[in-house]
Length: 294
Image (tube, rainbow, N blue to C red):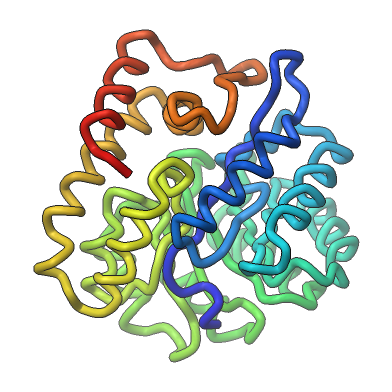
């Protein structure tokens, strides 16, 4: 699915001083990342703080992104959870949405199913989904790590499971998936700092957090890497890697929202339990942005 090749950006959800969704800031953000060269938009990923959004607010965010996008870029919508029935119900509700090109679904968290349970969970979703489905493995957040074997079985058994966003950080696992996957199945990086080395072993792009703030250099690095121009991207990679370390130092989306605030795109507002970055980290992020013109 070529729409998913390159740089996708997992959009943050801007809040205003009253902790309400900031529609104006979201419009500004969408235009900023599109102008910066990203290839597609991801709505309601982890970075969106979706656990603290109501159903109506999620609809408002999606509607706002669609309006700001003006059909310029494909939109991927995140639907995940640890109750399979609720996930399939939500998939059914969004199946015929004309502006969503694919669903992104994270592995179930907290209740920690085994590999058979993970397979059954995603098989149930695949059976009801009318749109392409991207699996999302992020054990650092979910407490469960989907194996290469389970990923490959799902990829071979269901033609509408078209990709996986892999954020396990395991090169061994990712290489096994790349080596044994169906030809059309895509492996997408879920680790910004590992994107360049992962592309070098066959990964076809990234769903990025830091591309919210630095879309132009990040998407440029991805495009050059996908064109096997690794010599040209080495310096850029290490420059971006420094920013990645800052952006994730106190968790996501804490760092990236701080950066976007310094760029005057959003306000530095969160809903509990998340709180703004420390003054020390904020100063480091501001210094990096000042020293690295975008």
